[in-house]
Image (cartoon, rainbow, N blue to C red; front, side, top):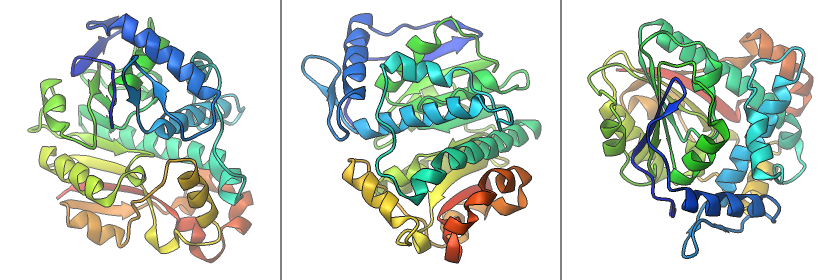
Length: 327
């Protein structure tokens, strides 16, 4: 990834106080470019400075339509969660193009994102409920759990993402007080070396942490995922937990999933990493994991039960929600 906004490694916001600021001239250039990109076809880059552009624009677009779907979920009477900030991101960007294509997965996607969000909300609540006081969101994007969830006193939440993402996010959230004791935005490229930035931000590898990789890993090449997970394992003390969303390699070529993957690739945001033998793969990286039995959860049945006719022959396992603990 390349980016042109110079940020300190960590921008700390504690109870609404921004302790370090970005260069506003560069930030305004980013916002202008972001808004222009929202109206362009997918797959094109947008300028951050006069000399440079942000790559992986499609990932930024996925963050926007994820935020829009979270905003839509929050407006429902039976919402699985409430995210009152989600719509503000879309409004600040001046609009956006939704997910590519019009297949079966796209029909299911809003409900899937609602289920995924609720599932990982519960996972993080369980982690801090067991005494963990460090939470790390890798590829945090426009996530607002630092604001919308209730956190025990003393919890530190680290949001790791590209500098430009943090710049946009901080502007939209300006003046909003987080519900977590300390929210720390860590500017880092997950495709490179990012552990030093996290450590410099105050992360303590001797203490347990709850890690979350939501809507992230499948965007990377396999060797990058290996490096990310190896780094996470090396930073995780006993008692640490991990949550991850993964694409099941066994069903990636199904009639349900293949059109979606083709549409995403055509839009410039392919999903190259697919997980085969989930338990064995994670065990090889030091984690004892399990894949969630989603149909055992009442809210999943309520929201996605009507779509089961689309999920024939095991395709319901195309997306895996994995949780585990450090061995």
